[in-house]
Each structure stands twice: as C-alpha cells, then as structure tokens.
Length: 267
Ligand SMILES: NC(=O)c1ccc[n+]([C@@H]2O[C@H](COP(=O)([O-])OP(=O)(O)OC[C@H]3O[C@@H](n4cnc5c(N)ncnc54)[C@H](OP(=O)(O)O)[C@@H]3O)[C@@H](O)[C@H]2O)c1
Image (cartoon, rainbow, N blue to C red):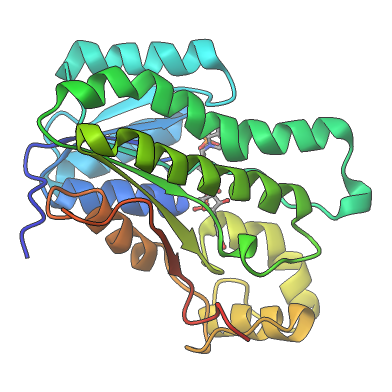
C-alpha cells in the first residue's frame, strides 16, 4: 500500500532512539523528508546518515530540547527555512518513571515538561507550517499505562493522560482545517533505553531485558499485567501504526487513541 508519503516533510521529536527512531526510519523508507529533533549531536548525525541511506532526501538532524521553548522555536525556524511547510509532526519524547513517594514537586513539573508541554510547544511552533501544507497530520505518543495504572508511573502516566486529552482537543479544533490529530499508546516496548534501565533488575532474576518474552514474563510476575500475545512489543511494531496515522493515506481517523500493546487493554 502506498502511504502517499513520497516527498512529504516530517518532523519526529525524539527521533534518534527507540520508537522515535523507528518512526523516522519508517517515514524515510516511504520517501518522506524527515527531520529528527533530539539533544545529542552524535546520535543526530548518525541517524541522519541512516535516514539518507533509507531513502530520505534532505534528512535533517536538529539539536532541540523540547523542555525549552526557545530551543523548540529555533528548531522549527530551521525546518521552515529548509522546507517552508510541514506535512507531519510526530511527538515521541516522554518523561521517566518513579514511585509516588520518590517524586518531588520538581519531578512532577519535569514529568509535565517532557510528557505534555514538550509536545504542546512543538505543535504550537509547527502549526503555521502544517497550515501551509496541502495536507497535514499530527501523531502524539502517549502510553498504555494511562488505561492500566502502574505503581511505578504516577507522574509519567498523569502527564501522558494530559497529552492524550490535548490531542483529542486538537483533533476537534483542527478538524475544520483538515489537520488530523491522533494518539498512539504503546504497551511495553523493548527499546534500547528500556533494556539499559532494567538490565540489573532482569539479571537478578536470570532474565534477559532485551528479550520480548522475558520482558513480558517480568511484567506479568511483578505487575500482573500480561499481554495477550505473550511478549513485549518492538519499536518497529509501533512505528508502522504511527506511519499510517501520519500519512496522507489516513483520511478519516482523527481524535483516536490507538493501543499498540499486544492485546493487554482488558485483564
Ligand atoms: N518503551 C516503552 O515501553 C514505552 C511504553 C509506552 C510509552 N512509551 C513512550 O514512548 C516514547 C518513546 O519511548 P522510547 O523508549 O522509544 O524512548 P527512548 O528510546 O528513550 O528515546 C528517547 C528519545 O527522545 C530524545 N529526548 C529525550 N529527552 C529529550 C528532550 N528533552 N528534548 C528532545 N529530545 C529528547 C532522546 O534523545 P536525546 O537524549 O539525545 O535528547 C531520544 O531520541 C516516550 O514518550 C515513552 O514515554 C514507551
């Protein structure tokens, strides 16, 4: 199926690692011009080279901190200077985990900075460019944990729930202009950062933090939240859903929150 992304322009925040990078790769493979936004210069450069190899003409790696509005505006100024208009914005940056008693006020503020406001800032800066394009889509990455709470994610989940709500509001507000806005809510996805963060915990149990079956075994044992497919997900399995929602081919899905969770929304 042709997604109609050939020569489209796309921005992916957090596009250098994990699901953001998988989304950037997917869009690049479809022929889109992709700009990835992140803080680390080395991974930006490495990602731009890869996106070029995958078929993205004029891939851009922009050093942006989504927690800083000045930085976000400068990033989108660069996008405007290169492309003039924007078809696709995908927001993937999110906050860290932490149990309720461990979280200070500052931690809560940081969670909202990264989980909600980062995407809000990017939408605000992107809107003039999205409005200039003949078609436009926004996809925000929320989290399945907004529907099935975990004790290690109270601030994280609250910020993602706010993002889901803002996305729904934007879908309604922007529908008259033909800009479609959707949320994708991943379940447990084995990204490199997930594996890195939990390697010690898994080692203690004799499990492999990079193995989707071991990861789901741990989720089930500790949090009693199995997925019907019996394993955790992979970044590319989220990316294809995001790519469809972000594409011109998506003509009638807006305001949706799509779970990509291996069948774990009801237990
Ligand atoms: N993994 C899961 O199981 C899971 C499940 C549900 C939802 N999610 C959500 O899915 C999203 C992607 O998760 P992931 O595990 O794929 O992420 P990841 O692998 O940790 O990658 C995070 C990306 O965001 C960038 N980033 C971090 N802070 C930033 C900032 N302040 N400004 C700009 N860029 C920033 C990172 O690059 P730099 O560090 O260089 O900036 C990197 O490119 C997150 O919102 C996460 O909450 C994850």
